[in-house]
Image (cartoon, rainbow, N blue to C red; front, top):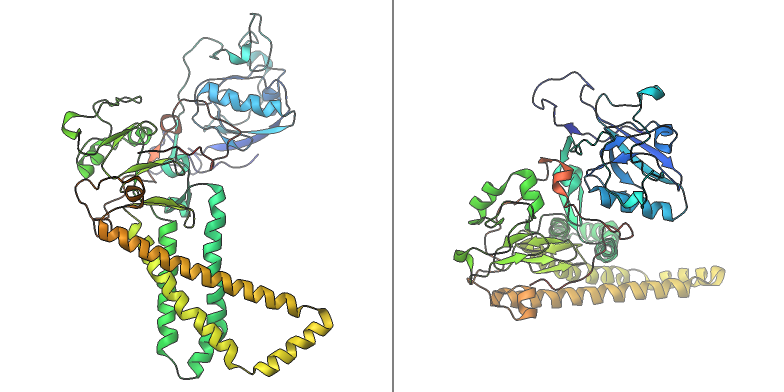
Length: 471
């Protein structure tokens, strides 16, 4: 059992002073066996009944609590069938699993007499019913037949983001894509930091003491610009257009219409939406996104890795683990421009430093190491391999720079070039306006309103997706 994350409840006055802990929610995690759990719940994971003689009752689960996590799967705000599917998957493994609940203020664990509990005639998850049929596949309601209760609490948008992005620093920074893309991103940082660490620890002081101040200072400036541009590309919003659920949950349609010049929701303001594009937008490059259920503007596209529509979508780059789009393309091009300049400054300087020292004394020391431990050959080959990889990475970054320079001169994005698409409106690729962020990561939303009511695949990790061609 542990304290919950900070959750703002619907009845919390918010901007008014309240007594400490008066509206504080509590998070409880219990271990359940692979068998009947013994409770009923509705859409949103709101617990309705907890009859006696069940695992939920024994753990102290109370009506009104909300199921937020089953095992490693975040099910907060999902439909009853979606949560039930995750529970069945966990039980099918035949092992104990954890279920996490959030208790609203005043509904913490209490000692409850048996006679005050709901009747056991109610539909109980995992327990046999008097009626025939598979109970676990039947709709569950409260024992008194009351309508399902809506989730009563809200939390910041970045904690319930429906795309495959990762937020950090309290929602201030975001990156995107899949878990397997962290490996290429780590490789890029390694190719930059390892040679530069050697440079600034040994070569930089040697140059400085030799009276050469301009070259090491310039190298330091290029290093800071390179790492800053890479960090900004990795951890900034590429120009995500919020999907329909986000717009409705944050009630931000009017602001988006003012910023984008049209209503991305289209003619309908319902959660399902209407795929028909307004007449005034037909033929101008506007398209309907079947995944986000919004009308996206020209040159934007849906990224299958981040699962978001992105303004002026260029490509999803695994080496920065993020989409490259309207709001971070200049960061990306700045990084590509500086990284090969940094390589031209650092690698020759390291080679100079290693060859300008007493080579005979260095070789004699390495020979002594070889005779004692046999490590000379291994160290030599490691250094040669690392240097070769660094040189190849520098050449690849230079080629990438020339490639994007050509795209900028043509006024095309990577996707437009590869798909042979026209640049509608002749908008420049690099020098066009960056534009504001189209969503507020700190907006308070109800997770049940944010996530679509559709079953989730508990065997699929957050970062994995099936590649589709979104035009």
